Length: 170
Image (tube, rainbow, N blue to C red):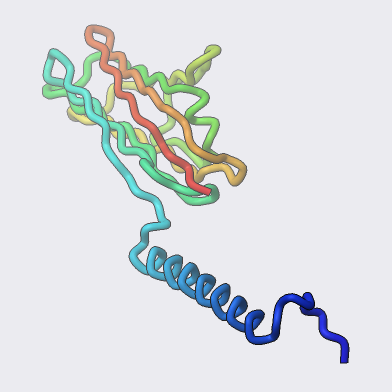
């Protein structure tokens, strides 16, 4: 019988190499299972907040760490004590939003446009003192590494900016 082993490598040595390689593969597989069991491969969220001079709070909840194909939150909450008396304009980097496969925006803006850098939504004043805008989307399958984001909220008399970054892991 002809052996496919190189002549300088004996059967025992080849078996030891195979076992060592199999052991390394088993350890790597176990590590992936443990990481997945503790949900360390899923979406992790964070919140970036800005407080404006008039007491208004702008909060962006976003995916801090995510992976392609996963639903990833992006929500802007504007809370203004006493309520709103004018439309609310929200500007966000179009390059950040380009990472997403959008399913919807809630509520619908009164108007929407874009310029070279930003997507611009204008919302009618909501009843009460809080506007919550939810972007229903998932990360595009081909996106890797992530993107910086910046959201500017303009209330006419005051303006606030929030910056954040979403990491997209392979």
